[in-house]
Image 1 (cartoon, rainbow, N blue to C red):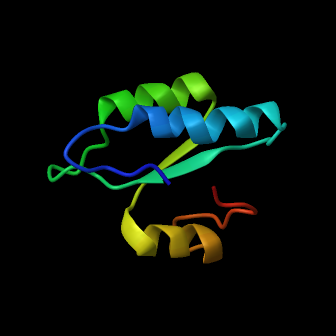
Image 2 (image 1 turned 90 degrees about the vertical axis):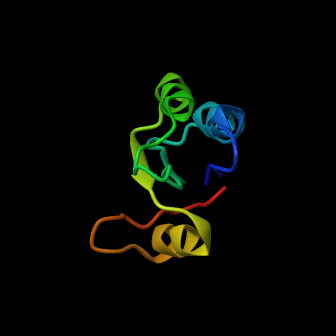
Length: 82
């Protein structure tokens, strides 16, 4: 989960993705709340790409964590949530 507040948090993307890559996790996905216009922050997307994240879901809050934990029609469930 990569939060979004008054600014971008690409550092959170790196802090969660890089250890997963080092540990050998085969596929990475993140969830992050969209901006009011529906977009995902560009810095977060760049950090995700550099860190090897395969999928970025636009979803935020507790519902994002629940969606990743249990899966939905459009979000595959994760084996681990960091």
